[in-house]
Length: 223
Image (cartoon, rainbow, N blue to C red; front, side, top):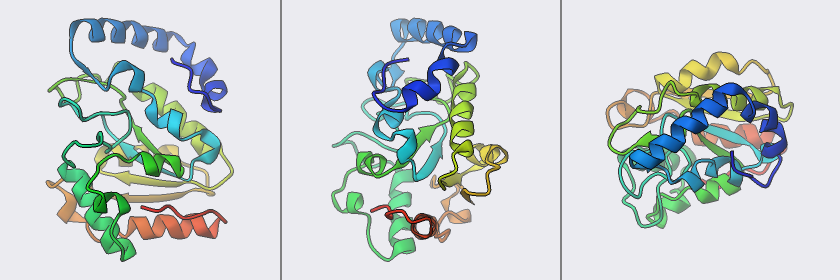
């Protein structure tokens, strides 16, 4: 694993030395050599690099990265500056405005780059961190899930409150791993156009997350 330059380095040192991570690294070396893989190798851990462990206020859990060119950038739901905002993220922006009464600053800028959220303490974590071009789910079951489950376990152990936003069946399956009563868990259907009308719209998660952060003495997120 590359050097992250923050407190994740020490927290993940023993985990990244385990045999399954060595196998994952070998798999990725071959995959990046023989296929088009997203995100670029140097961006796999962007979410951890931008949001140190001690600064995490909220976690938005995704599945695997976007699988088309120029989209994935190492953070769940986020796309590069200048890339068309994907449908799920457009729905997220719509719910932000509905939930908080104000449009997302990022929506106003017409950008899908969620770096400003990450820099405010929103860990945009996918459960699988890489994918083949045009093949969603292609890197599932290769070790990433074990690694990201370990990250969730570290966050669960932290005593400072965190808000976990779990959208869709895959994310909700992680709910059983979040046992610390200090934390807040918010669940809803996935913001995808296929499911947003079944309860993501109207979930109120962005206002609820900020209320939980403020009640713990934190600065709310500027969504």
